[in-house]
Length: 242
Image (cartoon, rainbow, N blue to C red):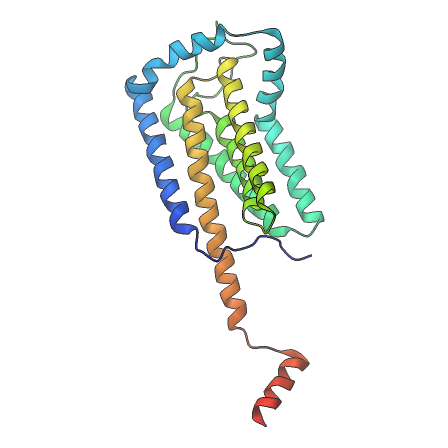
């Protein structure tokens, strides 16, 4: 089965690079904010108190599945399952892109947490067992955004109808936002941790997009440069000599 990832006629890489730069700038601003305790980070305790005060049984029952969905085990299982599905249906490029994007985002999450080493909210507010890693950025927000964004990207960069593209984008954004909010609700993260996770997810998705489009365009150019072979090619050459 042939790959279904389509390469747009207009080169999207300049726009992707611009969005990646803007998202990285937002992440950097949030990082500085959290380090200094100024700007948006100064409101983190108030936001946490507000959301914790809104806790309710049914909401908590929904927050837990969402937070497990965006956790290491949840996303690993989903990534393996979706990659297996792609491979079984002959979409090797899809599987490679998703696996590579998730491996990259997971590694980057660990690195960034070590670099910034931000403490999490007080365990007195926490619902559940304390986490062993640092707080900034939210790995749940980051990696869920990448997973959902890559899947949505496959739809957006295909020849599917506009309505399906819109639905894919809405589904990806909704899932990412809900998982991120669940981390604040359960008091595992500050608000700025989640915002940073979302912003770096957007930047990473744009980087992945640039790499994929570049590889696909080079592959198409390489195919066009190859001489036609086989019986039809020889027949064409004979016709030209006549």
